[in-house]
Image (cartoon, rainbow, N blue to C red; front, side, top):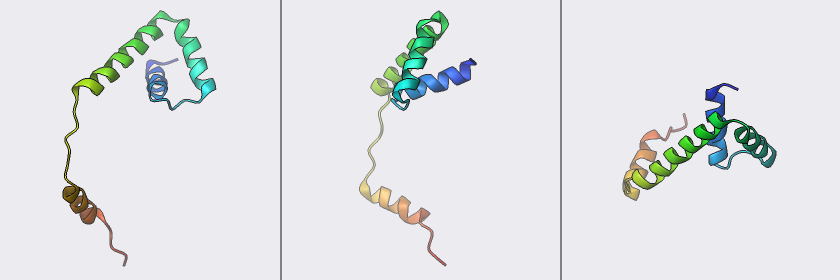
Length: 76
């Protein structure tokens, strides 16, 4: 399996977007390969870092409404 594909599957796994069989198959593959285990740990660490160190700024409801009005397409 290519690293890009593995990274994508690991990301889906960490986001709980794989079904039960897909998650089980991925974990079986990871258990059998030290390199895959390292990649899983790296992705988990990155996700944890982002969750704990990157904050989202709060925006006012007025700004949200203004943006929605600007992108709304009026019917012709």
